[in-house]
Length: 264
Image (cartoon, rainbow, N blue to C red):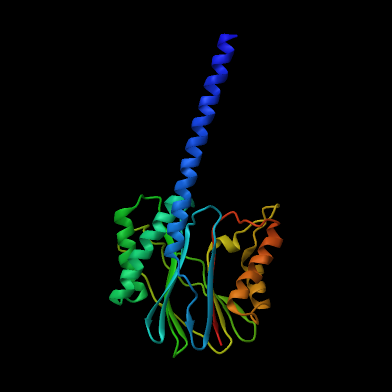
């Protein structure tokens, strides 16, 4: 009887310790989430002639996805969408590193491909071999309606023309932090009136249903095309609803980000 009572006491003590540890981790995650939310832009970019909106759908309390925008000149805005390998706190720390590095590059005035080269080397020197970041970083020229960008191993941007023709712009280089002195190239997209450019992460296209079928690029492009008449912010919800119906879940398996640029 004594041994039985002691065993119960020990088990309760272990369960209590597990509960205390769980609450401690939960508190740390809440703090990390608050910090990360502070790193995201507090509002959407507002520039004459364009309607833009972005949103991150995290799967955990902290996300491995990231987006940012910075006004460079009166008629230029720097835009980045990125995805760190993994999820949770380690991925969020990579995003904080990227944000600081990219914002420094914007202030110095680096072109996208130069900024990626420098950030890639910093990552190579600073993180473990299995850690890397995919990203798209570009400068949107409001006056000329051009988007000059570099793609570091990221999902190809989706361009929807006025006539609803959809095209994934399949140009890109290696992810950031995989190799030292990786060269990056610049690419150019001209946005005509009523064109829509969508930057996103693989949490969108790789969202899977109960049969392990992925949402995919084709379904994603059709949904964007069907919603081009909507304001950018409403387009994001329009796409999210379709993914929720397809997956039959409100939460995704991976962090997901959308950044929509509409030429008015």
